[in-house]
Amino acid sequence: MKRLFLIILIIVILIITALVFDWGRRDVVAPIIDQVSTSTTVVASPIIVLYPREGQEVGSPIKISGKARGFWFFEGSFPIQLVDLNGSIIASGIATSSGEWMTEDFVDFSSEIEFVKPTSTKNVLLVLMKDNPSDNPDLDQSILIPVILK
Image 1 (tube, rainbow, N blue to C red):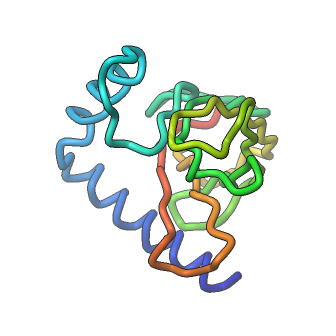
Image 2 (tube, rainbow, N blue to C red):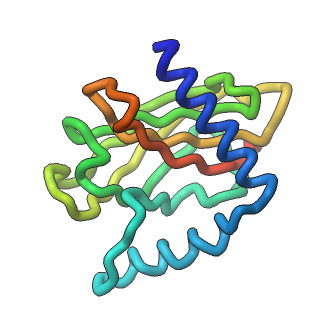
């Protein structure tokens, strides 16, 4: 568990650094979302979060929805965490598929996470992690979405 936490912390630090220096993230996200809505284009990203959006204010419980490629799931689910900028986990939950997940195609998913607002910060990261039952760190993947707690 400590290994997973360390990996997540490193990913969080890298993402925060990328956001601070704005390494083109905003230019990449919009075209990917547009591609998902049109069935004629192949999408490179394995997961698309439809709600919440980057920078959006969210209250408890957070209702999360989107589309993920079937290989992102294991047994129809994958883990989600709400992490503050110090790397502390505020809340965690599981996203579940709403359809057949044993596919390479996109599958709708949803989740709901309840949290108690921390007093130290309102800027947090929503972390969606590819389920990795092998615990092989080379197979770890995650998507981080900065949100603001109400």
